[in-house]
Image 1 (spheres, rainbow, N blue to C red):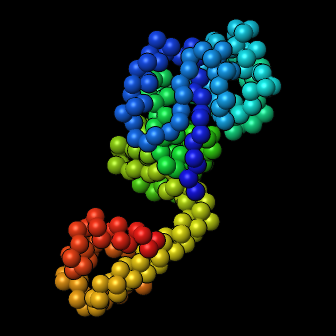
Image 2 (image 1 turned 180 degrees about the vertical axis):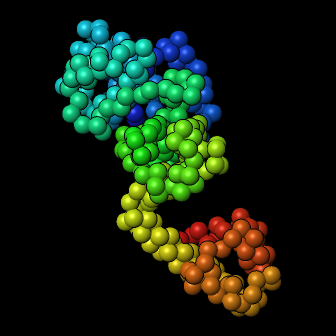
Image 3 (image 1 turned 60 degrees about the horizontal axis):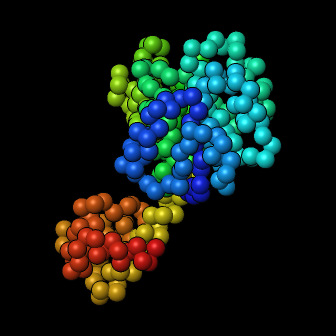
Length: 289
């Protein structure tokens, strides 16, 4: 299910403030058309009505009284905090988190940049993931906890996946298991050592068999609906299943019954048989969906 984004204020405090304009320029070139507003001044954010406020800051900023006062305002609900540890010691984390009065991991993420990634890269991946049609399926951060891989969505949902269900990755030495990269758009996590790419939905299905079953059921349901639309277009054009040049009658029947999904090549052949371009044919099918 898609998550519509409606006015998310992205507040960037003490993190590359001089490069905020650079983020805005790059945001315009990213896919999607989300309603994300970027701010560097929390006084400005309070004057806007935003459904959600996503705060990027660091522990050093939270040592300032004004920052803590804003962060704990009761009249600004819907805040989530992404804290960069920077050079502050881990021992200082509990005190700062307690100051934020955060009681849920859905409201807080501690970011530890690795592999030479910059704060700018990290924030832009958040923007790109939130700009997609289904912003719940992006991967904005990932880390290892013992024998588990943990991935984070831009809504602070987390998936814990055992390396034991990732055979190609699990066969690598532990050091290489931890050497992964994140796509700049948050589409997937990548292990160069074994050439494995995995997206959010794939990891979710590996972590939760029920999620896999539901995905298969959704796919089967879509194939059935799509196949019925293909059949109705064919009938409307007075064509038989055997009249599709380049496709056997059995192949057309399997597509129409939802037993298989039409490939790009099959769609081109279907379109040609109907006297339509591929785009025109797919538009007709889409209308019936």
